Amino acid sequence: MSIEELYKRFKEGNGVCTDTRNIVKGSMFFALKGARFNGNTFAAQALKEGSHYAVIDEDPKDWDDRFIRVDSVLETLQKLATNHRRQFSIPVIGLTGSNGKTTSKELMAAALAPTFRVHATKGNLNNHIGVPLTLLAMRDDAQIAIIEMGANQPNDIGELCGIAEPDFGIITNIGSAHLEGFGGKEGVRRAKGQMYDYQRTRKGKLFVHCNDDVLMEMSEGMERITYATSMESKASVCGESTGSELCMAFRWKSDHFESDTIQTQLSGTYNLPNFMLAVCVAHHFGVDSKAISDALANYTPDNNRSQVVMAGSNTLIMDAYNANPTSTEAALNELARTSTQLSKMCILGDMLELGADEEAEHIRIAQLVHKLGLGGIFVGSAFCHAIEKTALPFAAFEDTKKAGSYLNTNRPLGKLILVKGSRGIQLEGLVPLLGD
View 1 (cartoon, rainbow, N blue to C red):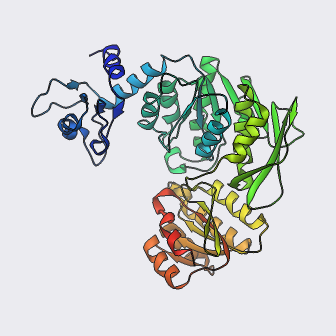
View 2: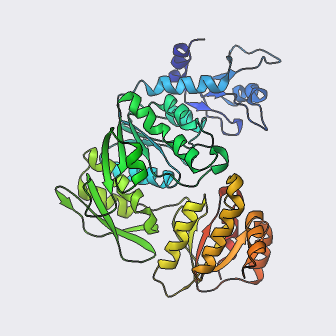
């Protein structure tokens, strides 16, 4: 069956599904395969649960006329997504980077929302499956799209750009994330740089942080819309953080506008580039300047990213969705800088996927905590090894269960606590033990 015919059936139905636990009536089921599952074995169940069609790439035991047999379910899903994307003449923004992708996406969507019907990646659906699903969920009335793209391997971003075909490209930054998959920071630069490479071949446009020398060098010679994190820079929009409170405040200006101080609901001045990116994108597409400011002031995080949570006498900075050396160092320095009457401590979980840099980076972060004079509890085998090797005076536990047992009898009181670790450590499970 051709992609065009498959697309016709997709449009007549009710979206796509990949999990029989969440079947939508009238959907098209795609029998994807993973390391621990084979969707082909659930195709008949998907039809029984209400899918109109099931796309499979293995011969079933019992044939059903609603099966659509293809060579590769994943490739078919991706091609269908590209076909759907090509039906739209709206701006499509591709977004990647080592840190701040999801926060930037959420802020951009908020800043654009006063003027546009925005379609943006939900949650963390940013890989070779998530990007097609994001595209296929785009409704006919969408006016602008933001597609987040993550990478674990060297060619991921180029492949995702080929699927989503973005008109605008963004790299938030180049940092120390997924070093294991890329073979070091230079590998990260090449991999993330595929966003610019794609736009270079398409003569597309970029939104670029002009105070980031690496990004400016990588984007040399391309059409750039720039944003700055200093008020003296020559950029489309410029901004600066103000104060040293727990939740950051900032102000911004363009050629014809200067904002009042905007009090945000996100912790960390390291989020200033993310806010300024959102300002830049919304400003470029003509959103009213005051509406941009109001939207960013009203944005409330709820995804364990720079989220401030009250827990009894403690105040938590929940940043437990992801962690790498770059983001963890920034979060620790911000914690040390923050003005508060509370004493400060951190609960840090292992930073995963660092490869050969694992030991050195975990030792460096543990030493930074000590240097900053912060209290610390560490969770994960890599941090346990780092604490043992450095003999630093911190408690370290192999997993959250053991850390939880410790917290059960050693509950912190009256603390400002940074909770940060890679997703796989699941530090959010400790939150119930951090209240009085």
